[in-house]
Image (cartoon, rainbow, N blue to C red; front, side, top):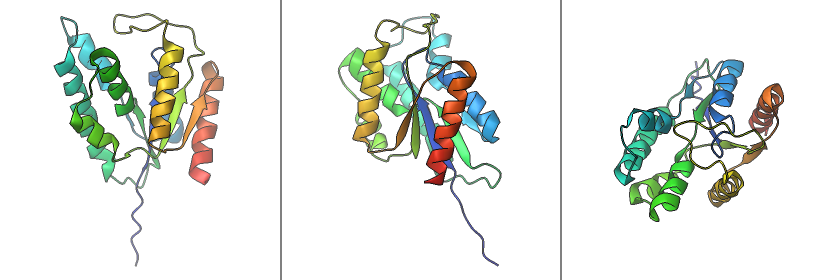
Length: 181
């Protein structure tokens, strides 16, 4: 008898603010009956009673790494994928954009190339302001930056466009295409 150990395909959903990442992550998880990891940064920042600072972003990055480590070697015979709502690329860009520096531990972790595939959400959805979002006028700028960061990691990605059901279908098709390659 042979036991086959199959690692889950790890997919990050990233993109500028207000591009439907969280909703898309949950919908993909439901569609593929696979687990997902919610965005920790939003939860963390919403609980602050002050403006976040460098140490807060470090705490967020460390929690993201902890979540990745949980799935790094995890296998689940009932789930082919795990979907992450964001990843360290966004945190890296935030460090650089807000503080002009990136902690070494984050740079080292990104070199591990944890994710197998990226779904990069286009800023083609209408901006929806909330108390955590900051860059409604710079979404194209951040989209291009995230795209460059994925390319620097030499990881495959698909750009996800469309509204509502079309956006989800585009993400499903990209995920299936990646799995088949």
